[in-house]
Each structure stands twice: as structure tokens, then as C-alpha cells.
Image (cartoon, rainbow, N blue to C red; front, side):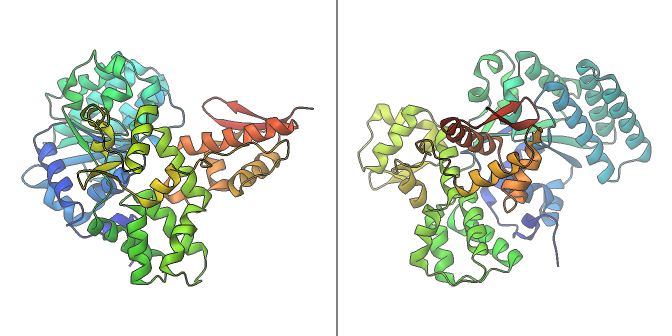
Length: 433
């Protein structure tokens, strides 16, 4: 039997404590901020929470809920008008997919069409409020999940957060929000967010790397879905090396799948992961999300040095997010793979003395751009060309931008081509001589 969302196959016990906590907050109409290291598995958990049929019936209880998933990866442009249009569209989609009264759906559809035709942010915001109130009028409690909220924070302002707060007041607090970010709303937009009501972030939950039993559920589902042949010993080694970090696990299973049935011994897996460009790039993305002080503290933990009381306070995000955890009167780093690459000075690409020596991903990107020289290449098309094996998992803007930056640096040394950024769309390659 095929499932559209693989997380539907998970048992109801998956991340049980987290599930119970989120259910409790939603039933009380409280807003929640999910924070955690980049690509640690927040989206994986929310897909389980939102689409698991048995779990959904358990969540409903005595109240009727409507879960509205607004994945900001779907933004055509990272601007506020695009954000409001996407939000209103997902309100309409959710109403249509949940079997609401046809008159209610028709009314929300008109609000959406009027909003996009006007292209006026004020009208879009007011139409979202009216759409939510039409849902509430049917005795249904809407919860909006803003997934990958980091994508819009550069455009966020105090007025933007005030408008979100306005959704709560206009619905008499019957709407609630779930935000997902890497460091929490205060850290994402501290200057503007501090001037707005903190009720948007009244509860912050850090999602740490998965426990072994939960990671094994994820691993088992992917192994079954893709028909991988992997021994129990090899799977256990994979779980140990990835340390509960879901993106490492998913990439590792892709790597094994690409071997097309070749038998891999458990002791070979570590080298396989450490030498893969995707694993290295993901590690670089994790480190890029940390401050220089936090990176220094990670190196200190890795070298088995004891943190002072002051340093433990400075390492609050590292502890909250699960980068490090208590062990043997000190701390340990969550993943052996991450720790090894953390200490590897060659994680970041170096120059090539004028020779255009490219990694596999750099070569794929260069070939794609060169075949379309002087043409704008959209981000979505670049993902399809460069990361076809990861497209279903989602590829971050950071990963695209970092790969472009690496290639740009190497091409600058060679001096024949240049990559031009086309704002809100993508990139194009031009000749420099």
C-alpha cells in the first residue's frame, strides 16, 4: 500500500512526549514556536502530526480543529504580499479539503480571488481575518502552521508581527499559530519582535535530535519505502553515526541506495558518509547557523575540555537544541559524523590556483548554468538539476546559495565566467571575456 506522505506509516508512539505537548497547547489555543538546529527533523515531525490519520482523530477530541499548513518553501518571492497570498491560499485549500459547507468555501474562494486581484497587503490581511472567522463560525478552531518561518524573517517588521497578532484578537483568540524556526522568534527578528506582543511566542519547544527508538522508526520507513537491503548491524551503525539528526539519516540512506545493492559492511559506513559532499555541505550549513562563540564551545567540548559556568550559560542554544548534551560530568556532541567534520579543517572548499576543479555538485550546477548561458535559471529548476535525489526532502536556500558561492569563487579565479544573482528568482551565467 502506497502512502502519499511517508510519515503516515509511523506508529502513533513516534515522539510521544512531543505529540502530547503540542496537542495540549493546541487544545488550549496557545501558540507554539518549534526551534532546533537546521533540518533536525521538525518538518518530519509536523508531517507526522498533520497527516497521520489515527493521530488526527485522537487530536480532535471534543473540539473540531482545522490544521492549515503554510510551508514557506512554497513562496514564489520572499516578500510580505507573497506571504499573505500564500497564507490565504492555504486557508482556502484546507477548507476545500476538509469538507466545509459549500457556501463557506465559496465565500473564502471569493476572498482569495479579491485579494490576489487587488495585490493590496491591507486587503489580503483583512480577507484572511474574514476567512478565519467564517471557519470559526462553523464551530471549528483553526491552527496555522508556518513551516520554515525563517524564510520570511528578513522581510518581517513590527507591523508584520502586529498583523499576525491581529488575527488572534479578531477571532477572539480562537486561532493559534505554530512557527518553525532554527533559533526561535526572538532570535530571528529580535529588533522588531521585541516591540510586539509576546503571545505569538508564549511557548517555545526545542526539537532535539531524535531518540534512538524514534530514529529507528524513520529509518525503517525509508528502508521499506525504497526497498533497501541493509543488515541490522549496518542500520544500527547508521543510527549511531547520525546521532538522531534526521537530515544525516535521510542523506545516508540516499547514499546507500545509490550503491545499487552493493554490500556495505558496518565499518565502511563512516568513511562513506564523511567523504560524501552532501553530508559535508549539510554539516557546513549547521555550523553556519551558529555564532563564532558557539563554534568555539563545540570545539572545546570535542577536545574533552570542561566548560566553565559562564561558558555553559553561553552554550544555552547548543544545549537547548541538542548540539551538545550532558555526559560524564561534561558534555558530548550529538553525532560522531558531525564531530569528525567539525574538526576537519577542509570542510569548506578552497581555491584551485586558477584551475576549474569542481566537486560533483559544483559540476552539475556549472553544467546546468552553462547550457543556459545568459538565461535566468530558477531556484526550483536548479534543485531539480543538481539535487534530484533530494528533491522530495526539500533543499534549502542556504544549500543553493552556498553551492553558488563556492562555484562563483572558483570561476572568479579562472576568470572566464561569472554567476549573476537575479533577485527573488535565481541565477544566470555570463561570460566575462
